[in-house]
Length: 117
Image (cartoon, rainbow, N blue to C red; front, side):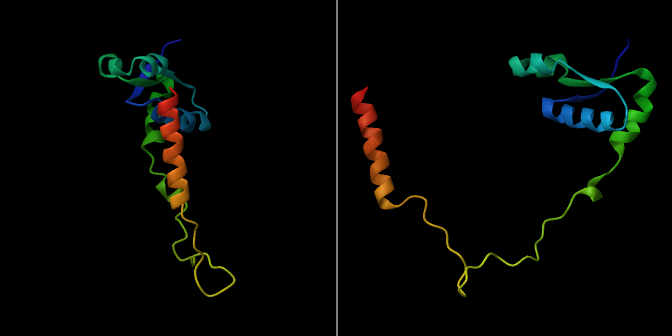
């Protein structure tokens, strides 16, 4: 089978997103050099990055699919929603993450680890 490079990526997950998009449209795609770059990331520029490859017959259709703007399918966050409230009229408060007792306990544990080793 002959494969042609459709696109090149710096990170493997970018290539996987586009591969999944193409396969959802019925185009078989493979990712080349993913594992090599994951193990030796400094070679990414020398190897040309992670490559998304397709069959030559599917190249034009794959380019059209990846060029589509599908941002209108993403849901917008509900900015009009009111903040969470408790049963009273004041807004709900979260407990502090680092109370003074927790800070002392953390530093005591850290000190014990350093002294013990």
